Image (cartoon, rainbow, N blue to C red; front, side, top):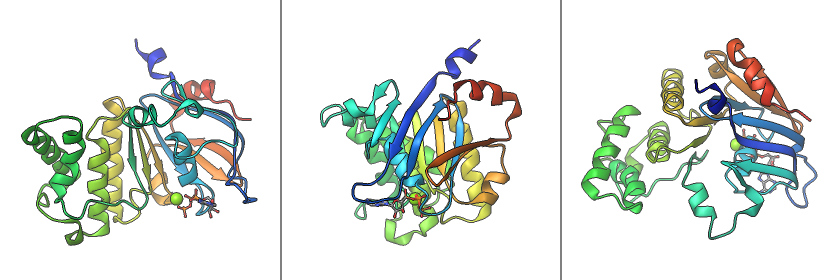
Amino acid sequence: MSIAKESLPLIDFQDVSFSYKNFKQEILKNVSVVFNSHAFYFLTGNSGMGKTSFLKLIYNGLLPTSGSINVLGIDTKSLNMHTRSAFRQQIGIVLQDCELFEHLNVQENVALVLKLQGYATKKANNYAEELLAWVGLGDFLKRFSKELSEGQKQRVAVARAVIRKPKILLADEPTGNVDETQSKRLIDLFKELVKMGTTVIVATHNRQLVASKEYCEYRLKDGELMRFSSLREHSSLNEQFMRMA
Ligand SMILES: Nc1ncnc2c1ncn2[C@@H]1O[C@H](COP(=O)(O)OP(=O)(O)OP(=O)(O)O)[C@@H](O)[C@H]1O
Ligand SMILES: [Mg+2]
C-alpha cells in the first residue's frame, strides 16, 4: 500500500504572507496549505490575484515576506546560488510567457535540456521526438519558433518542462493560447504525468476548463486561498494535510 507515501506533502506553505516590496497589495495573507505528491491541482483566481507570484514562491523565484515554504523537503529560504540550480532541476516550469531559443528548431529546443545534463545528442533527440509527439507536435520537429503559433509554442514549452521527468510541474496558463479541445488534451497529458509520479499545478483563470474535469482547485482571492474539489474519494486525505490559517 502506498497511500501514506503518496500523501506526503511535497509543497508545504506554513503561515505564508507575501507582498511585493513597496506595494500595498497583500498577495498572500497567512496562508497554510500543502500539496501532496502524485497529485493534480488547479490554481485559479482572477487576473492580478497572484497565481504567477504563487508559483514563483514555490520555485524560489520569490521568497515569502513571512512564514515558511518547504518544497521537496527544503526550506526555500535556505537555498543559495550554489544549491538553487539542483533544486530547480527537480521542478519543471512552463512560464506564462514561454520563450524558445529562436536559433534552435522545435526538437533541438526540447533536446537541449537533456544535452545540458550530459545526454548524447542522438538519445536526447529521440526523447525529444517522443515527447513532442505526445504533445501533438510530431510533425513540427524541424520548425523554428517564429514559424509556430502561440499555442504550439506553449506545447513545446510543456515538452521542454517535462522531459526531465520533474517531481513537480508548475504550468502558468499553459492553455492560454490553445483552443478548448487542445486545452483539455493538455490537461489529460498532465494527468498522465501524475500517474507517473509528478505533482502538477496548473494556474489558470479558465473556469470552463476546471469545471470540465475532475478537479482539486485552490482559488486565490484577496490574499486568501480557498479549496474546492470534485474528488470526493480523496478529499478526506487531502483535508488531513490542509491547514488553512
Ligand atoms: N515584480 C512585481 N512588482 C510589483 N508588483 C507586482 C510584480 N509582479 C506582479 N505584481 C503585482 O502582483 C499582483 C499579482 O500578480 P500576478 O502576476 O501574480 O497575478 P496573476 O494572478 O498571475 O495574474 P494573471 O492572471 O493576469 O496572470 C498584481 O497586482 C501585479 O500587478
Ligand atoms: Mg499570471
